[in-house]
Length: 259
Image 1 (cartoon, rainbow, N blue to C red):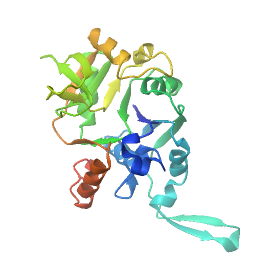
Image 2 (cartoon, rainbow, N blue to C red; image 1 turned 45 degrees about the vertical axis):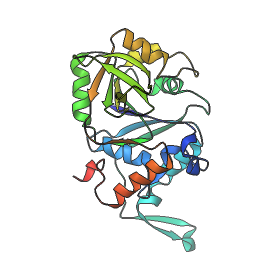
Image 3 (cartoon, rainbow, N blue to C red; image 1 turned 90 degrees about the vertical axis):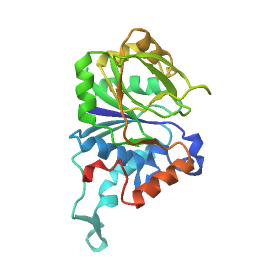
Image 4 (tube, rainbow, N blue to C red; image 1 turned 90 degrees about the horizontal axis):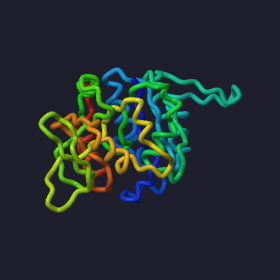
């Protein structure tokens, strides 16, 4: 199964660093948060990724093009015509496709643009700015068990994200913006989509979290996979600093690949 990662936004709420690079490339522990997300999926044996890039998409492409430089020891032998020798290669067995999905394209439009790379497959979908210790095996198993179009991971945090109402059968019955009275579940990303999701996406202006999600909910096509473990987005400098502190402590809950 492939993982699609939305990594094309401007990251305006964390502008301290995003004016230089796309938000998914902001580093935690010396590695982009995008890398942390991919490592989490890779821990469950998923090794193929499609990255929906946009803002400063060249930064993402260049980082992967130079991946050995960031992860291995390198000898540059100028006496032999700039020969480059890579020592102790440290690289995951990933296949990474970085797609320029447009500078101002909305989330639904970005997903629509990578349709041809999926070849009618069910796929994982998540945002490029949140880490978690979601059990991906159980998430996919749950998705396959109910036969609906979309499974999203719900987390019990009252923030400014889209709020979910969930019934006793784990069917999402409403998707709306948060209000002050809410202390509810939110969409934490880490989704699984059937290929017919593309029939709900119209064009570059389509915001996945608005009309497509609401229509899917109205049709009873969205199920919730509740996650009561660690989840944290990185929207602000404060959230970034908190993730950094967790990483430096050696107790980062999302670092499941070494447990």
